[in-house]
Image (cartoon, rainbow, N blue to C red; front, top):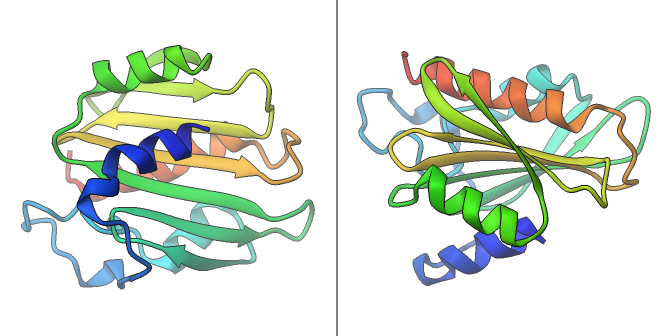
Length: 164
């Protein structure tokens, strides 16, 4: 439901099915978080310990389907919303009934977002030139692989590229 909320918020910016190679972006580019983010597909595979990922769409909100040697497919979703705020995201998440936990990652304010109805779903959103979100959802709705650990690992990898 949160993915639908995020997608609805950015439909005006024209979600499309174009996917680009994140390795082409430069940290010096003020919009390097745009599109499908700064992580190449192989980094995503390595970060979440998947056997493979397949891009499903982008560039405003990007999604990958990840395969694991154990368990079913996992959806990975990345969004960077330049004019968004962590406070606004938190308010929307709370309205949707999600559990929120505040945290700090590499000097960035952030939140864990958990769906109490789905133990296989978790997101991490950080305030970084807007908001950056990694949402992980196990399609079988189980807690393995750990969706919060995967979302956190993807966020840490993203923020590490940011140079802070």
